[in-house]
Image (cartoon, rainbow, N blue to C red; front, side):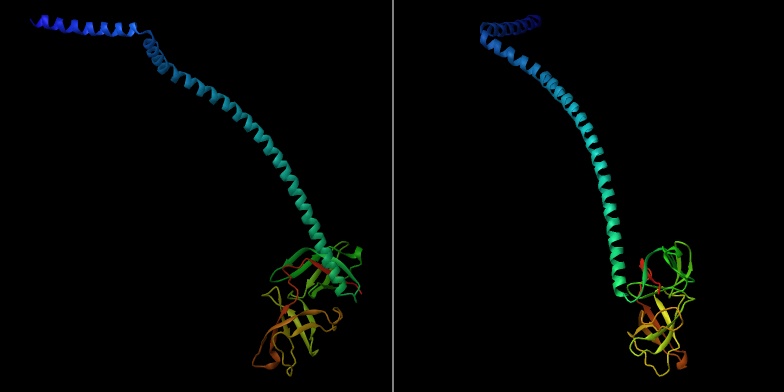
Length: 270
């Protein structure tokens, strides 16, 4: 009995399948639509994948072409940048030369009473023990030992040795330097010497006991000593150091010339 029941179920299933096929094939239009839908679902993903792959390959070709173009443009920009940097350096050199010429002009106008030769510094030895500079003029330019060297702000020093094309200058801040000076307002005589501790200060000594030196007083060359002409500005009084013995008091003079920034000078030849 169980076998008969099982056979009956199988028969029903087969009958249902046959009826489905009959319905499908009896309606040709619906059948075609069904097949097309199935085909579309199967084919479209493949077609989309192929289209994507094609576009990707085409895009890569354009990418590599763009890379080559960018490399060429980069090389051109580098070359242009190098040209601009060279032009900028040339302009900076011209600017520096113009500024130097302007400084020379200002100096010659300011010290018009002197016969001078312009020069610029090619070496500095500004240390605690020696403070000298080397300038780019020498005997071929008429430079001699003991000639006075000045800058726009005031006194620099004097020539101590000369070659054909260079001259060594002992600055007033050198420890071995001693300049006969006077106070601009009263013409009181003092002596200014270089110090070990500073690049822009002098020690004023032998201050007259009856002279009331105060901060801000101006100091200039006295013309004594046979090297420096009279009236060249040296600096101003920064402070006065009083001692128990008034004859030993001294003052600190701040130089008018900034020796750390000094680049152009004039040599007085007369």
